[in-house]
Image 1 (cartoon, rainbow, N blue to C red):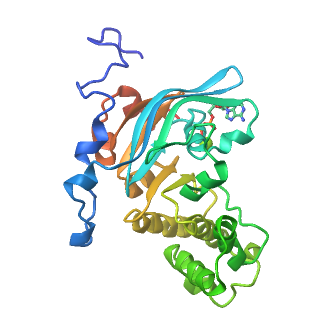
Image 2: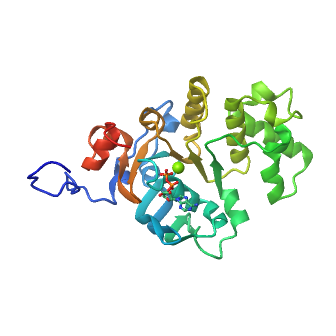
Image 3: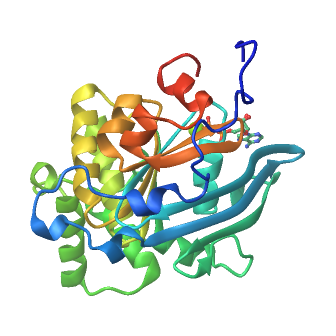
Length: 295
Ligand SMILES: Nc1ncnc2c1ncn2[C@@H]1O[C@H](COP(=O)(O)OP(=O)(O)O)[C@@H](O)[C@H]1O
Ligand SMILES: [Mg+2]
């Protein structure tokens, strides 16, 4: 920090706002489309995932340090921060994708409605029923559109055909894809456009009715029109689902999220209502990042 004589260290908060309390009491939807979309006071305080003291390593390298964050139910939380600051690592611990990386380990707790997702006792197959993930590059299975959606639910239980048909239709409708694919459900998902494939992956995630959906830069491989559709979809889904989205696009974070969390070098610098983070961040690092001075 170049300022020669600051009254306080450059990384000190400019306000007295304590780091951990911000999001709960200030939550309010940015757009209220109907009275039923207005949350009650109780809704405002509902936490879907409570993360405490999360540390993560790859071998000796510590990628996350003492992360404390509450992810609010039925809201969109955007994770922003410079490349390599640990956003994907954070997301990948929320659904234990890092189990696949031999050098990866973590300490702390990730509590989803009373279950600690980091616990050794946590069955990862069961966990995937509660936590869905959508990746940067659309990754449909080399199967039919129908089977892509039916795959997850079938893994968890035997489902009568008629019920499965209804579930496939419902998931595709929720992902705003049904009208485009209803006449070719048995055709390969690989024949869809990139934007359609990503909506298919979202439909696939929704099909197991997860409590939490994680999206790691879901639009970065898409054209602007497909990106706009996915953003619209995220705004619709947040009425029902809890969503955490990593994005490099500040405008996107501002457009789709209720809460924004800013990460830097493995630390959570601050989190809060998106409008507040973008207009009056408490930390200089955040302001520098969102105004494009680094990252
Ligand atoms: N599989 C891995 N093995 C070793 N280091 C990794 C691995 N994945 C990520 N890292 C390192 O961890 C840090 C955080 O990475 P990541 O979570 O991917 O950041 P972001 O998503 O914010 O760009 C980076 O320094 C990255 O190089
Ligand atoms: Mg990443």
